[in-house]
Length: 240
Image (cartoon, rainbow, N blue to C red; front, side, top):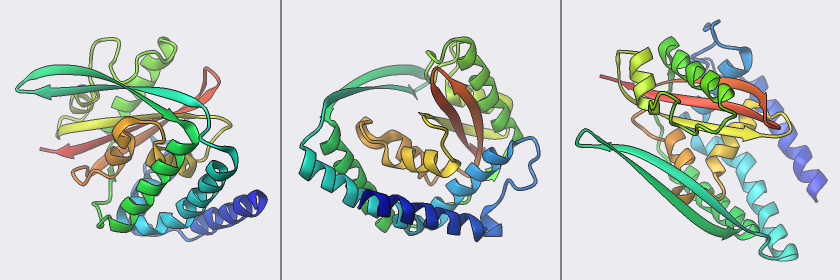
């Protein structure tokens, strides 16, 4: 069954790439981005414009996760740490959340909630590329590389994602960021699916960042391979 599942997923993904929807390919002429970075903007726009189109990938993954849970048990006990930075009344607040879970149980839970979200989600604004937001993401990618990927979302200068986004793209009033790593080398679609599932992350924050209706601009940066993983940064913004 596992071999059949992966074969079907590969065929579906290939078919999706062959049928490019021009209105979603907003970064196609942005030569300051790498081809894979432009492709990721397209994939984000695809799920934002038609969330149900991603069910063809996610529903088989849910069935596979249910089979693993049934046949192999709850899995290993893990924990995840989430660092949240927010600004309230002009003051920055940092919060750390630790959540324990069993890996196979959490995978089923994450995929089940994602399927429900994709079925209910209304059409969201398509992201337009922005060179300033791209430069903000590149800045943080270089900063991460210089600090062995230990910075998380806070820059070595103390900057938050929205600080960098509004600095490099002054028309933006606010923004936010996703960071993801995967091995072996993933496709842009692989990273989008990983962030949508967001297994083990309290509140599925990456998922809801991707699907936040306020975002109208975005950029993605491929950080290459560092510390045994292939890294990506997604930045999002909204104009004043």
